[in-house]
Length: 371
Ligand code: B12
Image 1: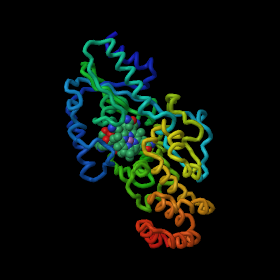
Image 2: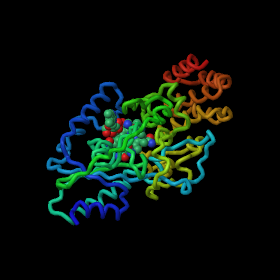
Image 3: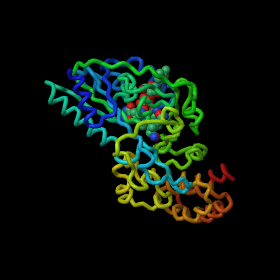
Image 4: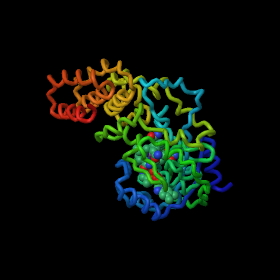
């Protein structure tokens, strides 16, 4: 058995669902895609900023020869999830943040796999990354034959659909490379039509600044009309994957991603009450932990504003006195969105004591927009 076969066999043994090999080289075709996105102001700002580093693997590992790409399925079977409460009063957390933080799950796999390769070869030099590395994960996955580019921008695998995380080991071993996956999306366009904010377009065009997943993560102020389209999203968005026919019959993934109790579908009013310590306990081990209590609370206020449950206005009032200006502003938005008449009464009353100019200005802006 040659070394590539051995690596594949070991990978399967440690529950790596997909593995592929591609050549380390200058990715000039990728540069075009990235420049196009940049020029249209469609990048999210969460990407690696140094363009050279994204397309030139030698800047990461001088002696790079091959990039070993792995895919791990995070699809969780319905029977393994506590009942998902659809009532508007519960928030939605996307599947990529269910269960254990995928960064640590995948890092463990990479550590294990590279230790194996180290034992089996001489002078093995390598670096591995999950999500936050300099290169473009989907591009590498595509080149290594893990899957094809879906119209929803996600890499879709024949067996696992798009519910896969990607990571890679860039190394100095010369290994036989794999073919790309020749399948491609047909003309259903369900993801493009299904995206509530129009973030997805034809020809793989995508404006990340409109993507609900981005909106739940950004610290920038969110446009009122976009807030209205966020529904009950607390972190991430799965709409363009849930509507995808390639995701209908897929194999289940690793048990690590089974969510603990209601951590995928929390009660919004309870979420608003969490202290930083309680937030850490509930979400610290998940992929959304890094975003922090305040932004997730802001998203909970947006979700409550979209809930159509007028009766929660009374529970929201206390957040107008929150020490955070952002929380005050989004509370005012939620109140007026839920109930214009009662909301105006509450906010008029609040204006009598509010001292923050930014909050006063926001309330006046809300009156102008909604009343
Ligand atoms: C920044 C980022 C985001 C941003 C912007 C997303 C985006 N699409 O750019 C935000 C916060 C919005 C986000 C959201 C999500 N993300 Co994200 N994100 C990243 C990150 C860190 C960089 C992405 C990037 O470089 N974008 C720039 C564009 C140009 O690159 P790209 O996304 O790879 O786009 C490819 C295609 O669009 C295609 N393409 C573009 N134009 C054209 C034209 C033609 C002709 C062709 C053929 C192809 C093509 O080529 C591009 C290059 O690979 C990567 C990890 C990484 N370091 O690469 C994860 C990553 C892409 N995210 C991931 C996930 C899981 C998600 C979410 C599903 C999470 C969620 N449930 O909310 C959503 C999906 C949103 C979507 N439909 O893309 C996974 C994707 C796994 C997969 N199966 O594809 C990654 C790879 C993380 C990981 N290591 O697993 N993400």
